[in-house]
Amino acid sequence: MSEHSTSALLEVTGLEVTYQDVIHALRGVTMRIPTGAIVAVLGPNGAGKSTTLRAVTGLLDFHRGQIVKGTVAFDGTDLTRVPPAHAVRLGIGQVLEGRRIFGSMTVEENLRAASFEDRDMLEEVFTRFEVLAERRRQLAGYLSGGEQQMLAIGRALMTRPRLLVLDEPSLGLAPLIVDHIGQIIADIRAAGTTVLLVEQNTAMALDVADHGYVLENGRVVMDADSETLRNDPDIMEFYLGRGEGGERRHYADVKHYRRRKRWLS
Ligand SMILES: Nc1ncnc2c1ncn2[C@@H]1O[C@H](COP(=O)(O)OP(=O)(O)O)[C@@H](O)[C@H]1O
Ligand SMILES: [Mg+2]
Image (cartoon, rainbow, N blue to C red):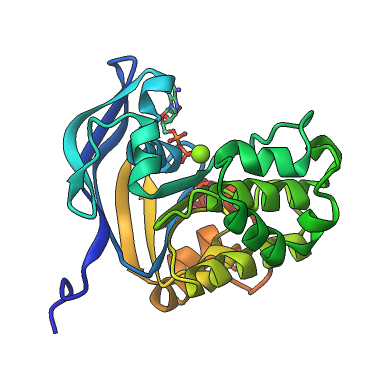
């Protein structure tokens, strides 16, 4: 069977993006998100992960960014020039970096703001996230970080997306909560939604994803199935923090260590 035998829900081809006409954020990114898959986009700060998502959701405009080359196709429709509202209507739901919930509105109001009429979906979200159901009349600003992330995910689900894109949903959350978020993402896919997951938490992302793309400096430097990435020595060292000797290290420490090693040799 050829690699392209399953249909791709989202196809990004040769994408180049600049900000303010000068900052070259993406330098030819190609990715394929098959229907029903969870695909992770990994890489350090500034690699171009959020920019890739913005190109998919139509939010580049808000950041004074633009696609200068390449295409983004969602289920065969060219997304390159569609406004964000149109992307939602086509079936793309998104969880932005930093959650962006409305703190002075209740949990239920936050959800209904995404889709006012859909009572059935509201109840589905409350069934999926019991903690949100318990707090439906409370102000969202009083939720914990993990609960706010669940609210942001619940809000994205309100529009019944076929593709859910998430930008670093684990950011700033405790390890136990991160595992929970990972489980939620796996459940969402099991219920039939395709997922594009941007994460700096490589361990969690590779746990739930089928396939991963590693971005650095606006380019894909590696892409493989999650199992292969988990066992790759560079990924282990730089992104999973398990370098020589087996002890946990941070990416920055490893870089520092490498640099020192170079000076000493
Ligand atoms: N709104 C913006 N204006 C100008 N440059 C930006 C903007 N957003 C991101 N960039 C630049 O584009 C590159 C990619 O950033 P980004 O996509 O945010 O990376 P990541 O999400 O992987 O951390 C970086 O060099 C970053 O400084
Ligand atoms: Mg980012």
